[in-house]
Image 1 (cartoon, rainbow, N blue to C red):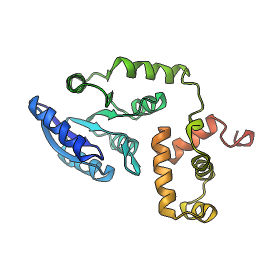
Image 2: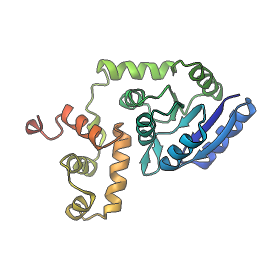
Image 3: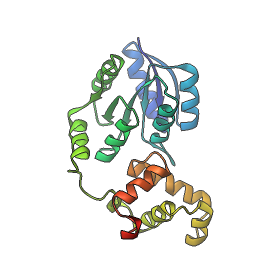
Length: 213
C-alpha cells in the first residue's frame, strides 16, 4: 500500500482519483487545490507519492515542484495534467518530477506510474517520452511565446522588465489582482516555476529584442 497526496483544482477529479487509488489498495492521506497548503501538508504528513496537476486555478503546479525541490522533500511526484506541451514536460522533470502522465490516460496507466516511481524509477508514457525528446532536441522549436495573445505577451514583457503588478495594472488599466492572475496563468502556460525562470526563457527566445542580450 502506497500513501498518496492529490493536488488538483477540480473536486470531481480528486474524488475520482481517490476512488481509483483506494480500490487499488492505496491510501490517500490528503488532497487540496491550494499549492501553499499542499507543500505544508506534504512536509508534515510525508506521503510517498504526490499526484500533481499543473493548472491550479490562477496558480501553477510548478510552484509546488519548485518549493518541494527547494526543501528536498523525499516525496515522489507524478505530474497528472492535460498539458502536452514539450516545455512543460522538460520543466517538470528539471524540477524533480518522477513521472508525467496526461489526463487522457487510463486509470491502469496512473496505477502503473505509481508502481514505477515508488520503486525509484521514472515513469513517462510513450507520448510523454516523445514530448520530452522534442523539448531536449529543440524539435518543439516553436517560440513558446507564440501561443500568447497580444495582451498576455505585453504582460510577460513588463514582468520580465521587472515592473510590479501595481505598475503594470496602472499602465494597462487592470487591477493588480488581475495582473497577478495573468502572471500565474502565463507562467503555467510557459512552464516556468518563477519569475527568474521566466526571465531566462524570455532572454533565450529574445523576447525583448537584441538589447535583451
